[in-house]
Length: 283
Ligand SMILES: C[S@@+](CC[C@H](N)C(=O)[O-])C[C@H]1O[C@@H](n2cnc3c(N)ncnc32)[C@H](O)[C@@H]1O
Image (cartoon, helix red, strand yellow):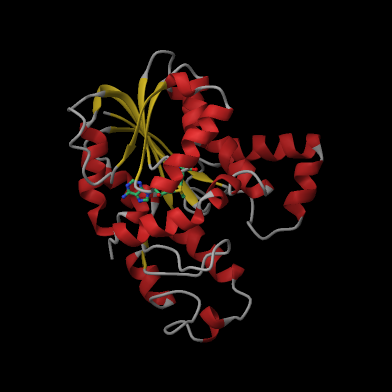
């Protein structure tokens, strides 16, 4: 399943759509707010931080706004070019230590304990599929003892339900073992968490293969560390709800929704229901 060549090509093509993902819809903006909460909570001025699987650098910018010095790393050269542009526009390029094109499975260019904190948001740990154990071990290795590791991955339950509800042809429900909308069939994805492909909404290409996680499984990946927080992202909202755009246009309603999300995202009954799961661990 692990296919770094395809993943790189996919994100090279995805380009600016990856920046817009957390901006153009209320669902995406809520996701950015929740992910930023943890950066603000754990990154301190002067920290040396790795943003692994940075994409176009949205969270690298937050790291620098919190006083961190960031190393921006991604497998896609186009995403790194975009990150350089976005960090320049945000006038924080001076807080970047390096831009590095690399795969999180192999971080041997960094010594053990090189970073105060490591962030790996938005799914690089999902795209490495069966290599997730090696990748998690690398993220842990390059963090100093006592430093923080912040990751987010695609959720099995929330993600799968989103994929099913976004299909307009009912094929996943009509023929769950042989659906046209994603591979392999519904029951196999549910059993294994391994999603080989599904069509992208933004580019004419199948998504790169990924592993979808349960919260318990993600926690096990970091069992050698102190796991401090495990929360869902977007546990209060549905990606395809029209009401959400209306809510975000009303400042009072929007603030209440954000507060509700913050109060509920660690609720054990809801952690798996968002489409990402965020984990914070101390090495
Ligand atoms: C969904 S985007 C997330 C971007 C950003 N971190 C965010 O949360 O908005 C996933 C990013 O991970 C990168 N990626 C995927 N597999 C990777 C790997 N094995 N090593 C490094 N980066 C990877 C992709 O190129 C893409 O830019």
